[in-house]
Length: 66
Length: 160
Image (tube, chains in turn brown, purple):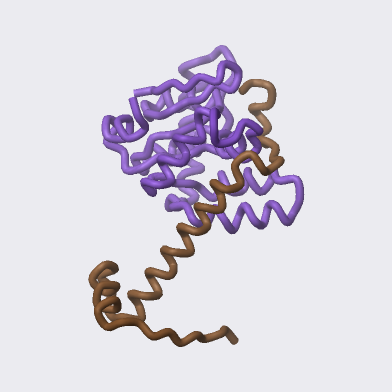
């Protein structure tokens, strides 16, 4: 079973979230905003890996022809 | 020409960043400061213009040195936009390669992965960003615009 967290949010912020996301209700709006936040965080982590990952280019037919 | 100029010129909705570019970004020892492709990837990321494919993720997973790194890469790349993909694209890739082979009988033909990715870019109105010569040949063949990086000369070129 997943964990639940209760957070208090100002009414104005909740209304802004609904307006931004065009969601049907406040819960859906915050779910969408949290999803977007997680997506941005993942993209940031990819860029933070620049120069740090030892990875091989594996497209076999292209070996030695790049 | 900036990446945005190119995108606008092409009327594209985004950029399909090829595995060859991701590998170059991830393993580059000349990180951040003077590698010519990193500012472009950063710019495209900030503009939320990067699209990717399940096939690109599969290549990154296959190229990772261990399972843990592969898993991390898979998780983190979920932050990019994914093209909608279906089995019809493999058919398109097959016909595209067949057509290319009939047109250019000499020289090495691009592989099916190159054909698949360029077919995907064409279908979804994306420009491509690649360091892969066969993929460039295929993009030129199908009239798909893009940014290309030469690993030997470390030069960028634009196909518009």
